[in-house]
Amino acid sequence: MKRIVIILTVSALVLFAGTSVAYYNTSSLGYDNANLFEIYDGGFRLLEFDVNYNEIKHIADEICKKAPDKFITI
Image 1 (tube, one colour):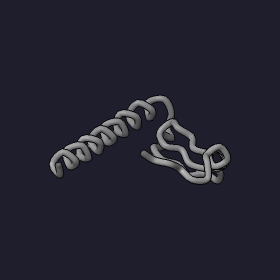
Image 2 (image 1 turned 90 degrees about the vertical axis):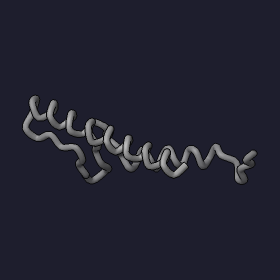
Image 3 (image 1 turned 90 degrees about the horizontal axis):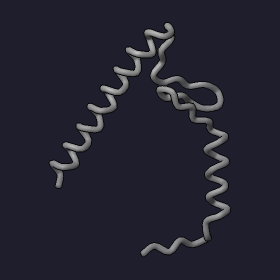
Image 4 (image 1 turned 60 degrees about the vertical axis):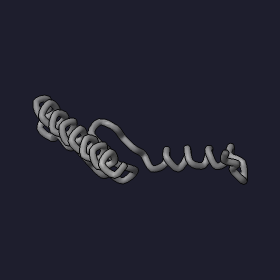
């Protein structure tokens, strides 16, 4: 079981590294400032995905409102 976890972890890291290199190479052709990871006041940007802290807080608040006080897991 341990070998499977190690193989999956290494595969995920290799996939992420390859994707990052490919993104950087192709985006640097279009413009000079090709950032893989950027932090700004309201959140951060990873590759082309913007993550806004206020949106995450809003979504978490909505889930807390709709979720029952005690979860029953089976």
